[in-house]
Length: 259
Image 1 (cartoon, rainbow, N blue to C red):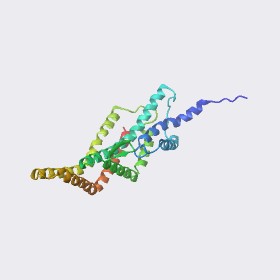
Image 2: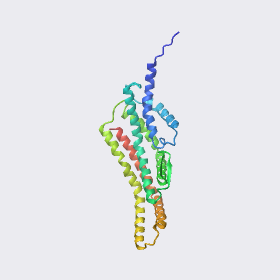
Image 3: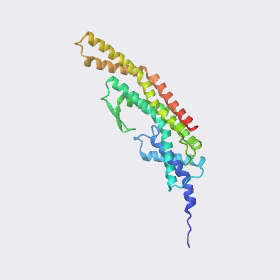
Image 4: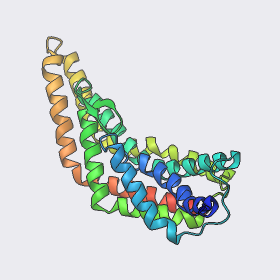
C-alpha cells in the first residue's frame, strides 16, 4: 500500500503563518522593552510565535510568492524592513531619553560614572540609564506595548503582505521623524543643562574676583548638587514630556500606515 503525500496544501497553509511571522518577528526584535538584549531570544521568539498564531488567521492574505524563491526572498526582506521600521519609530524616543540623560550627566561631571545598558550592550552615564528606566516604566504604565501590538496588527490591513508600499513619501516621513531624536533630547536636557550653565558662569565670575578659590574643590560638588536638584524639581515635567513623546511616536506610526 502506497501513501500519496501532497506537500502543496501543507506549504500553502504554512505560508499563511510564515509571512506574518517574518514581520512580527522583526518587530519583536526592536520593540522597546521586549527588544532589549536583556530579554532572551527564546522569549522574543515565543512571543512572536504567539502573536503570529493570534494575528495570522484574521488578517487578509492575498497571493503570496513561494517562500523558497527569488521573489519570496525579496518579499521576506521587505517584511523584515516593515517590522523593524514600526519598532524603530518608538525606539527613537528611548534613544532620545538616553541621549538627554547623557548630556545632563556630562554637564554635571558624571561622565565617568557609566553603567552597562543591557538593552543596547553599551555603556552610558548613570543619569541616562535612570532616564531610560523611567521612560520604560512610563511606556508600560500607559499601555504603550499594547498600543504597539495593535498598530502591528493594523499594519497588515494598511500594508498587506507582499505589497510594495515603500513610496518616496513614506521614506521622507521616516527620515523626517529621525530628526525628532535631537528635538526630544534637547527638551529633556535643556532645564538641567541651563541651570548647570548658570552655576558654572557664577563660579567663573567668582574665580575672576577671587583667583585663589579652588574651583575644582567647590564647583564640582555644587554643579552636581544643582543638577540633581533640577532633575528632582523637574521630574513631573520630565514624565509629561516622556508621555508626550511616546504618544507622538505612536501617532506617527498610525499616520505612516495611512499613507
